[in-house]
Length: 360
Length: 250
Image 1: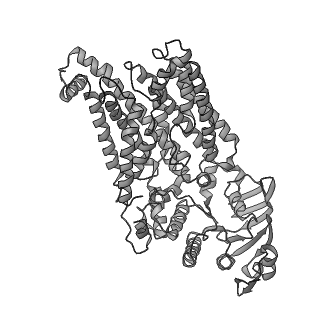
Image 2: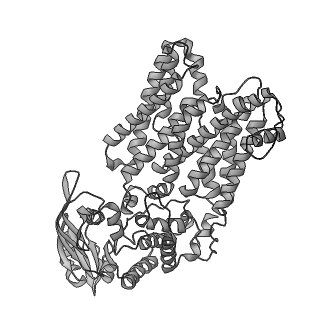
Image 3: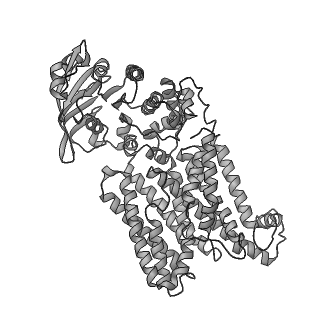
């Protein structure tokens, strides 16, 4: 296929024929998101009904005169249990997917995920310390997310300092290597404290596998300011990510201050990742497969990849959460298990069909 | 257009470019030749502001040291020897990136940018390939896409590091003819580095022979491409027949 296209006589494929226009992908992603939100609100032990949920939502819109059929208990289930969980899933998924896309662009490495620079290991250490020394209050107060957030931030800052000191000549590889170093070191510390406090094992393990358990809107309000800053910054930089993907030299020759843009992007992506990890634990795989799925389907420009990753990442995590809380109800699967279990085969299919489509 | 005085670039503790003086007039094509490690690429990168350098560089009578990165990118388009061409990016997206110095930091390209990119695509006969991904192009097509990106930048100075190194004989000629046409039509000033001495002599208005970071000869092909100079600085045995440099087996 690729060979045939190299022949000068092969007809040129019309513009974007294999990929479709940007607005169509945007509409498709928005529809996927809407379906995820509806499913997330609808599915649960208590059957509310889609129509009743719709009327309940519309009843809060002034001047429409729509009356809700839901009882106060059902309203509480919708607004205090399901809605915050859906919103948390949207935010965490959007943050992880857009951070993954950003890291892949900044480090020009398709395997880069949001945890590349050590944020997961740092957050893991922070969470372990909070659980071990938080005196049993870790899961009830804000100590755990704060400690995880701080740990993740410290780890990435350390990675950046080490990577920078390794010299510009090594380019982005220095940062990747520094990330590996910091990850190993923080993981060692985390394991050490975990061993010293064996009673924390289950709590730490369940945090590491990720979850979207919420206490109402509290976690959402905790996450929202960081999510807002991170997503806005990444979306604004999407064209510059395309420039960075040409490599440091060419980006600089196009008038871009590579070091500064890279720092801003890494800070924004790390802020979002650390915040998402702090409230939902380590949800793996999503930061790699969502951007790549978008890229394979809609093309490689970050101008499309970043916004689509935001929409698809959020929707994907909400769907994963629905599976996590229904598959073995009344028990719950760790959401990280779901994202990998369903994400891996799905990604394998995308990889294969996009190759057959000749767009690789 | 380009005025370089006492330019030195230190890499790894040694001056890779050593006190170079060079003047290039508007619309001229100057090609730097010289053996591997002579400092050709570093000289070009210094002109593009990509390596810290001592001495002075003036472009269009403005000292480079006082120009912002963006202002410099509006004056100089740089094509490296092995440009990064993201396989998933379409040709038109790639060419549009050449407009970066003209677009505000958070901005998007406007009509003028789209028109400039379309002109560059048309000039390099790429309009039909605009929607193709870079990964599906042949070497010659990709080289044209890279040139189109540089052209879309609309900088009066074009720096080309080994523009023909990955092309076959036919595509080499095609690329160099294209560049020469652009130089004449758009009034570009071209500074290139090349290894193929015959082609270098055929297309440049002036040759600069670098060795050990210094300019050791400068002038037209007849003055620089001599058996003695090439023998001395390349350590190569050649015969020069009517400006064609022919290697001779030892």
